Image 1 (tube, one colour):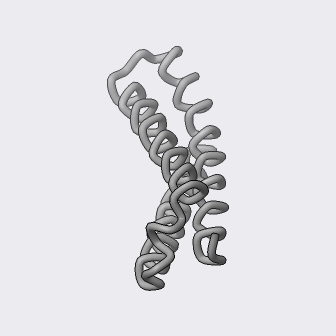
Image 2 (image 1 turned 180 degrees about the vertical axis):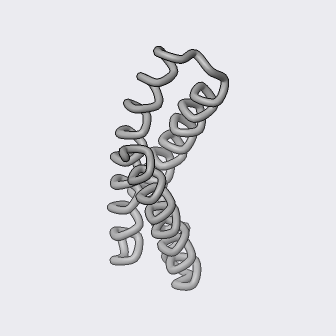
Length: 96
């Protein structure tokens, strides 16, 4: 695995951690309030967590798909980094 994909894998794992924290809060809120909005947030977090798990699987088993194109590796890393920043902001405002 290249260094760029290693960093992308770490970012995906961090994203899963942030999503787990959000799931705990949103899951409690859904059990308490039973609103469609909180259920939507739970579904959003679950789908995004599954996406990150699948991405890690691809990074670890199919790194060769990105190996020939450094620009693709950079794009993958940038998307993981942007997702991390977005989830960090969302986690911050949710925990407040």
